[in-house]
Length: 319
Image (cartoon, rainbow, N blue to C red; front, side):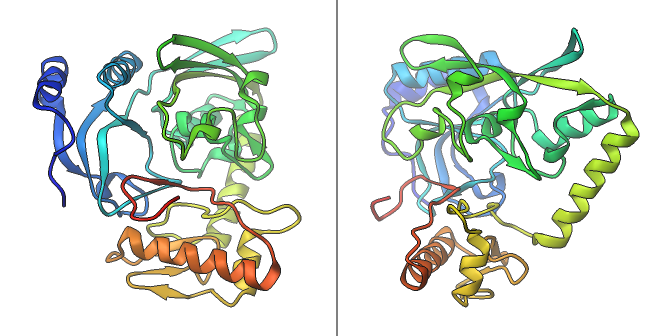
């Protein structure tokens, strides 16, 4: 584990004066990621409301400190060397509902758990998020990545998102301005680039009243299908996006890689687009599986797969 070296003492003191003992140094991130891997964050802060989240990113931006927003810890692979700058654990989860005509608008802060919100909506007889009943992550991550499953996605539900923009402040994006596509948005396109990113603070979702028993039956079907087709355990979620006219899992399986192992990680026997940490894996083990799968599929099928997960932190190769 590395120690804090890139942040000036005066800068750290400023963060400490602002956030007090909530600010931590060299905090292991493996406990906060779904794959249970990843080195330490130089500075680490949990934000329990959108105002604190905004304050933290604004201070980091003005102090020219790199920042990363950590939600549910899925769909990311954090390097063993950790993450420089400030990692903000987003736990802002205020939720309220209001009726508007034939629909109900749910305004929710970006750190709210997506599957928990889906279950709450089902219990209230509000349809639109049943597809998310077992999807890991937060609302913010779902808005950025256009999360989806079982034929539904955020693009079909989002009315607007309140976004903090570096150097500009708050802006409200409507659905069309998000430029949604398969597992992508205008915000997702910033990932992997060395820039100060925009940050989702909250979202407005449009829901439709339906009988609770109908919604429950639909969600139960999705849950059963997920348990039947996807592995349990520590994974980052789907590793690759499905290429046009293909399923990534099928391509990886057809390349003969089900069960392929590197160190403490292996490609799932149940679904080849899931890479499983057997409790002793490193992030580098999983990255090696990514490379093997990508190269094997390219050589055999001449298809270049695109990662659905984001590689975060100090990797020793060019991403």
